[in-house]
Length: 118
Image 1 (cartoon, helix red, strand yellow):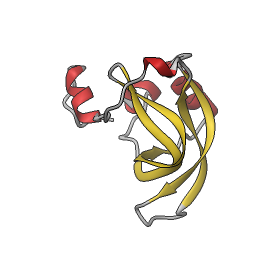
Image 2 (cartoon, one colour):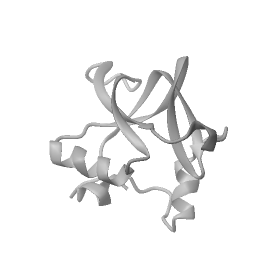
Image 3 (tube, one colour):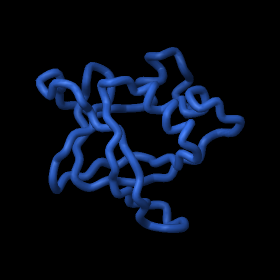
């Protein structure tokens, strides 16, 4: 997905990471990040290299998400272990959310993709 949204020539580098103080719920089939003191969300982080690419990601996410600063904790033992970054938090009605786990591979298959592309 990142390759297509950002028109990247190479596969993006995704680093395993987690963030403290958030939880992930589902908004239909999409992940929805919310504040949750003490909770941890695990996933991957991508370093956005340009303002233009950040704007492309924001346009893709629509007004249903807002950009907020966050602390990213890397778990791959490369370079820095922590970094300041940004995440997309859900900006809609919390009553529209349900409990569940977002599975990128399953979602990509539903979208007609092979489940391996980023």
